[in-house]
Amino acid sequence: MNTLFLGLEWGYVYGSYKRHAIPYEAGSIIFSSDQEQVILQGRQFPYDIDMVVRHNTTDERGKTSGSTKRVVNLATKEYQKPYDPAFKLSPDAKTRAKRITGRAIAQLGSYISSLLSRHAIRQLVVFGGNNDIILLKKGGVRFDQIEIIDLQHLLRAANGFRFSLDKISYIVDFTANAVSFGTDRKRYPVPATYRHLVKPHRAIGDACRIFTIDQEFQHWRDDVISACKAYITKHKRPKKPAPPVQPAPPAASADIDPERRCPRCQRPDVIPFKGGRWCPHCGRYLVLPDPSLCDTDQNDDRSMKLWRSWPNIPEPWHCQPGYNCIYDDGECISWDEINKYLR
Image (cartoon, rainbow, N blue to C red; front, side, top):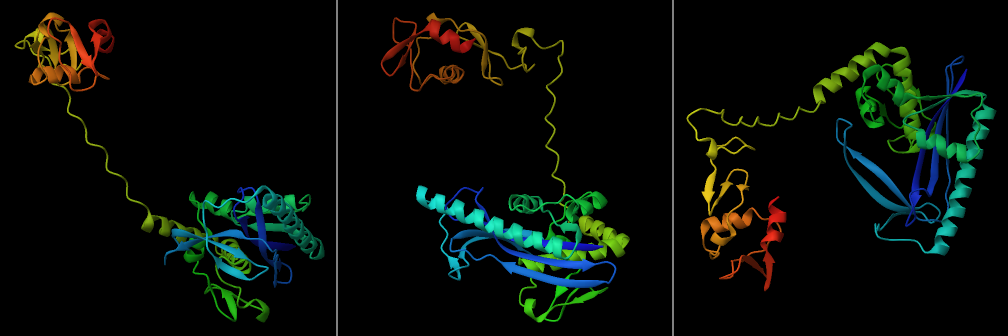
């Protein structure tokens, strides 16, 4: 049975919506399980259009440490154009971008369809390739008699953890050079045409990594699972400390005056104030003060506490002599309005 291991590289048209995805490179390995034959295939789709390519940066453990964005144009061979996140295409440029992305996707679909028919492919293996499959279906590729296998899903089912391609490549110790690629258990030759392309985040390089991981998982499944579990145990994130437990309110006792106990927080701190009762812990009045006793200035400390218990009433304030009111930018607020805030 012949199996196709596929790696795709694609980006978004610079200055357009993310739905304008455009493929620019495809890499594949055709593997015959009967003859143990490995065939590398690759192709680029250079179009004269600027596109944003995002690459993840990883540390020595294969863990993603950041990402970079750059603007490239394969047709003009410009690979380090400046990136402006606020740049937007004009309506005419968007129409042109839509036309070019349609051509690129159709060309990709035609290329992959020819590989599937020419090599009598019965299995297609990808790694986290949901978007890749969507692009292929848009390009007209039919998978009626082809089994699609997502290697990332298989590894997650076996370990309960979703590995990235960089992490699992680190775990199985994948390496590549100018002559071969693979692991210490088994290596595979690299044709001279593709020696400079077998590297991470290139379509051919990712196809080689997917193929190697699949072979390791098929032939040395227990060892791969053990290595994955060891990696999870060694690099798992420490648990966050539990939040401190708030002390319980003091229990009621018979020697405390019930008039001083707040029915809301059970604190024995209720303070009588101008004919009312106020809890400094809750900041609310249990009994409203007598308005006739509130003709005081703003320097009274308890008057300031009274003000803090009234939301939406600005400072400074004081009761105008002879009136039960509060000044707010020269306008009096009646006690009826104040009572609405206190309810």
